[in-house]
Image 1 (cartoon, each protein chain N blue to C red):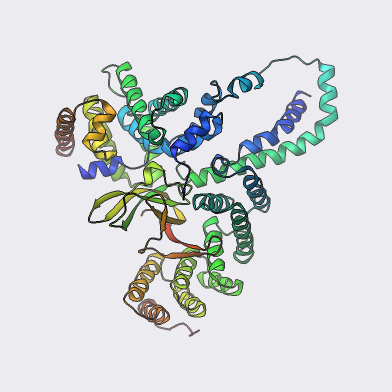
Image 2 (tube, rainbow over the protein chains, first blue to last red):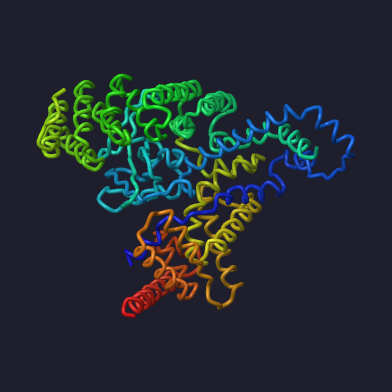
Length: 187
Length: 205
Length: 182
């Protein structure tokens, strides 16, 4: 059963448009909050309107060149903005992930989570919560994209602990150390 | 004509689309002023064709650690500068991982000249692992010149990344048992170079 | 020191009108719950539909989430129900087992061909379990839950859950040894 479970724990890729579809659906619903009613009233709705050929020509002629330059730059910007999100999330088709085991011995801990650049340093990320295996040993096996990463353990939601078994990265930006992880393609 | 109008509309709404394309995690975790400042650094890095994911991660890390706004902005800015330097040394074809690894090495105190030497020693192989090991040795108090020479020797011996990883674990174990960090690193490297070097040894550093 | 925004903080933001903050919750739970939905329903399309449905229902009823700190568990309960509904809607016909999905999984994890084949056999065997046994097996062995937690999630008693898990294991062993002896 352990072998079967291990196979079944492998990440399942989700289509790239999934988040966008959820957020589109959510945005189309009434917004919460005391401003909800106001925003419902003021949120622009899609409108269809007809432009006469003459108006079309005048508008297009007036701002056509500027539009071409602006659209090209913006198209590149939007796409480049998308790539860091894909890379950072690490769960899309762009970067395959390997399952990595993280282990920390922390006998007095009540909770241990793994945070790093593969999960936005989010100690609440469900997949990176360690389980207590007994004797103060905490572990979790979770997907990490192929590549070079920085990470740490967070104990009891407050204490950051480097991984004693991993290479160390000194960080002068925040004056702390993190652990380094290099995940390679599985042969 | 219709195409020009579409492009005109696109130009009009695109700045809004660009804003919405920002990583939403930054917006969720940073206050407005910090977000604006960090976004400006990220946008500049993007224009300079530097990888932006490490900058987003750096900001998220700062937010997660509860760092104050100025420190987060400064951290993102410093990382961007280090990545620019790294790319200058490694060349335009360097991968994001190589740039990240080199930026970490610069942060640990490795000079640009030594970075270039390690890059040259690796030849066509990625420099990521060599620099990760170098940074780790420095983090474990191996003097920077010693750590650099050790990594250079290993890189010139063309040892594999997995052998480098084993070397790093052995040095760590020796240091944990009380060995002098510099001695541990040079001793382990000597053993690895002897084992992997063919008949004619490389010139000593 | 608050390390990261907890679910409760994000939920509070959404309830104050910050709809974009909901994306943080989507990002947090998408991958793990997509895996469960995929194994329950057998193909990516149905799994994504059920998961998307769960997220939108969670958003719609967010004000009724009694313990926002445990938003994840609450969302999972919604997803389990969506998967039950989707499965029942299809009736007892064979689950669509899409080999394209397996190819995607294999490409995502760089598996050699024999490992992909083994994975396919496991997925096929899962489709042949009764839905309640499949659900109990996945919660126990893949989601690593304890029986008390499973009971709270599913509304089924602990003894019944243990029986379902046991039967699922027996059936899987039988099905997978059939494959190897064929």
